[in-house]
Image (tube, rainbow, N blue to C red; front, side, top):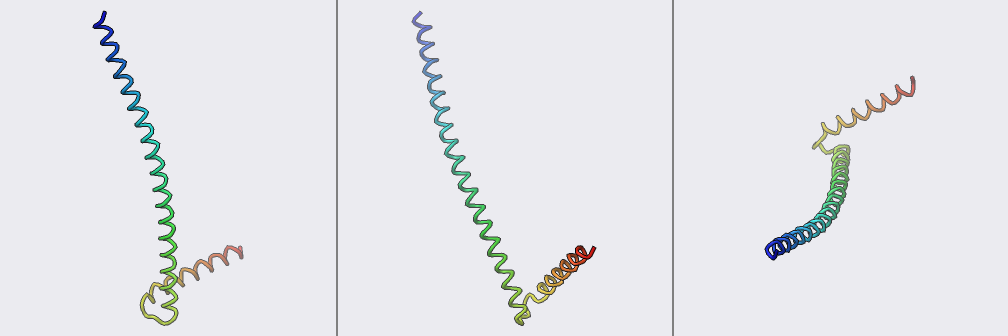
Length: 96
């Protein structure tokens, strides 16, 4: 009987180790999920900041062109034409 008791004790010990390891992994998983959420929120904030800076850059490029800079003149003309087409479309929508 002592052999069976040793086997049962060894099995019980291994089960406890597995359960403890499972708890540790669950805690680690929770910590990693929190870290991932924080990283994702930071990334979202940085993406928004990048979009804002890109918009500011494009606005400055257009302002420089309007002020007489030859650089990016074609791009500004295309933008103005696009805006005029959008305004014309809105006017036609309102007229209907």
